[in-house]
Image (tube, rainbow, N blue to C red; front, side, top):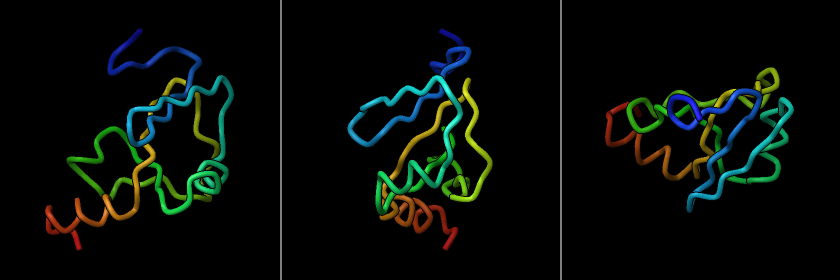
Length: 85
């Protein structure tokens, strides 16, 4: 395994509670969001910069990356705490 848990050719989505969803093909952000209502997809730096959110209309998320599915209420709280709102 590479840096920060990355594996070549694998897309990892870490859900609340620690469940890791693994994809071997690129996925569309809107499809993930449809399966996880009231959640957003974020990069691994979400706790430093809660505004870094993947847009639903973004190009397919590539393999080799790792993202989090984060409840929208958590993102809102993070933005409040970092004075982003």
